[in-house]
Length: 378
Image (cartoon, rainbow, N blue to C red; front, top):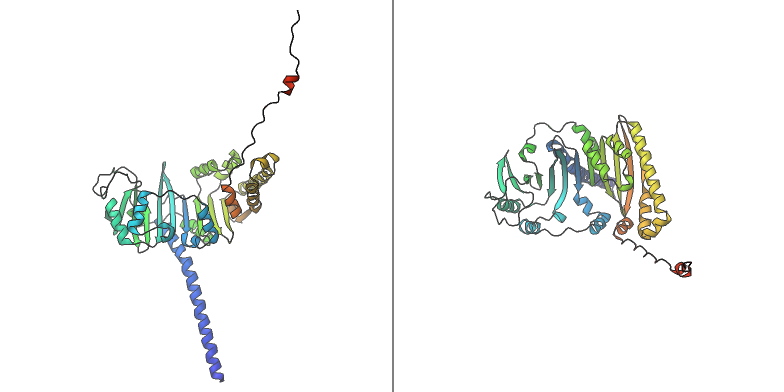
């Protein structure tokens, strides 16, 4: 082979490799930017008093073998007649047509308010026709906004809602198409307020920093802590983890994050709490360490061994042994990180029947029989 031919082949090979690398990088960047872009839109449009967000990459979770086990393990909700009708008329089924969703939550007084953005395979014409039949369509801010009651009355036929026969005071859900394949929705009174906001949420950098930190997880939650969220979290803690001291320490956390990352044979959970107080972070880490040790001791107690199914006990010990509690220094904020693994054994253990307690033994009559009868004296 001539030298010039060899050089030509070498150059061609290098160009081919460069194109392949460029394509891989663009593909990876597009995957990352899809979540970053969606979260950027949510950050701009979500309520200014948002206290928490949830992000779920449904497509990525569907591809995970362990996530599939988790979906199979989770109880299946009963088919709702209205949802069945919706699927039949629109062709949209969240189980395979929803790609990703970003959800923000706030509280106004005692009422929860949410705003969400969802990507998926939507047949806009069919969905619009279905919504026009059961709800109200309004033109606001250049968007067709569809509104329906949060729960449809079973005795309202066809397009009766569009004719104004439904109670106007009932909670509403509104949504609109932002573009093909993306919708925005809320349970607030006016969706268009979110779509035409001039000012984004306060401190967007604080939210963005945590979005970036959690971007590799297909499911994560970010909570900006306040008194109500702290009290709610403490109230929902398992019985062994409830205490006034724990409630006080949780109340001093300014941010909470939770992330789930499916592995080949487990689900890795990472939870973090951030506090401006180093003392509070250290006390919280010590308390959680102590709770894990006490839980392990309780599972090794002879009475507990008799009460628990052996497989369940092994799975719970496996979960506790995987727990890793560490403290992190992030300049002005001090973080406590808790990492643990949920395995298939744990999922199985959660469905195992509890052992039937032994029936109480009847009292023995031997002593009564041996006892001499009482005789009176004259």
